[in-house]
Image (tube, rainbow, N blue to C red; front, side, top):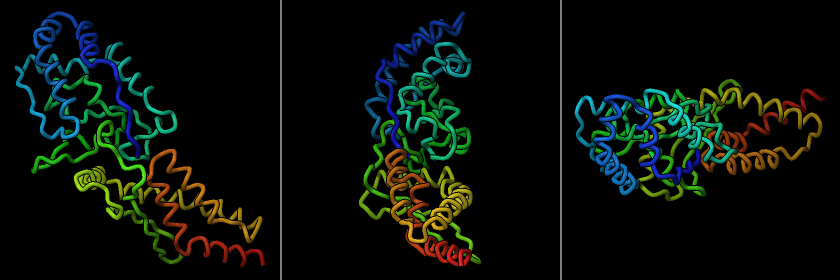
Length: 283
């Protein structure tokens, strides 16, 4: 999980370009409420560190429909905006949903739901590339009953790059390794940020999703590790896995789930069990 880069283009210019493509009443309405929309854009930017304080602007039903139409009706300008957001992201992780770190980001989430804040429907700061599974799980949720944000805003919530909060414990059931993921604040992540991280993982069901994906990853690591050991019984497996953990974290972030899984496998009897198994097979 890593932070995204937001566009530096004026969001107001994008709104005008999209609104100008509209026809008839929608175009007239969007022109008439443009100043209210732009004020909210300024409010969003000024509140980017505490978006839960943002207050929705009042619009008539027709104004709401016109604003939502900006996003719900696909236009060339909107597609250009989406493409530019995607192309702004570093290539090393742009093909992975950063909400979860599992799937391809085939859609966009409105971080602050457009159903509640229709004026933000095409604000690029509010459009987060993500997978359909995360988008569906998040839905129109974004703040709790206590007015606390429930999800990370990956443009503005600066994730810790050197502090681990995702850990994996490996337990063996009849010799089969099973992974269990935990969120713990062991290294001093700021409390407010950690609370959002914890909620983000809970609301998107990430710990369970990681556990389900772990079986195929463990199987792949097991096969690869046995190959190394069969070739050389003294192969430095631990060093190889440590190098892979470093590479994964460098590419996908300190708390990438696969790196955490590899680390969990490294610091228990998994490697030694495979080494003993290989010795039995060889001799």
